Amino acid sequence: MKQIFERGNQKVFKKTVSQTDLAIFESGKVHDVYATFAIARDAEWSGRLFVLDMKEEDEEGIGTFIHVEHKSPAFLNAEIIYTAIFEEISDKGEIITSFEAYCDTRLLAKGSQGQRILKKQKIDEIFKQYQSK
Image (tube, rainbow, N blue to C red; front, side, top):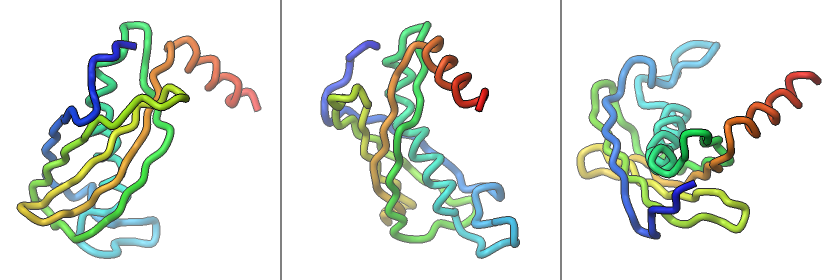
């Protein structure tokens, strides 16, 4: 793993809310707004932008946690701007980032997420261990 970032470094990701991002569950549509679960997915992606630059060819990132505070709604076709902030590499080797997501000037969501970079072979071993059970 390349340790090339310092606390406070930022990555920006822009997202347009699409039909597949709306709050729709097995029971049907709840409402026509950007769903919290879709925000979590996109927040993880914003943190992964650091991982993409840090991992070596034989490595891959794997998510360890995500925390999302959904503060306000965003509607279909709205542009969302995610800013991911590099916080640290923890004692456990997790890359910790925080994020803020804005719709225009309004805070949509904020939170944090973690990912660990491991050798691809190690990830395969972990997955095989659970697949055999």
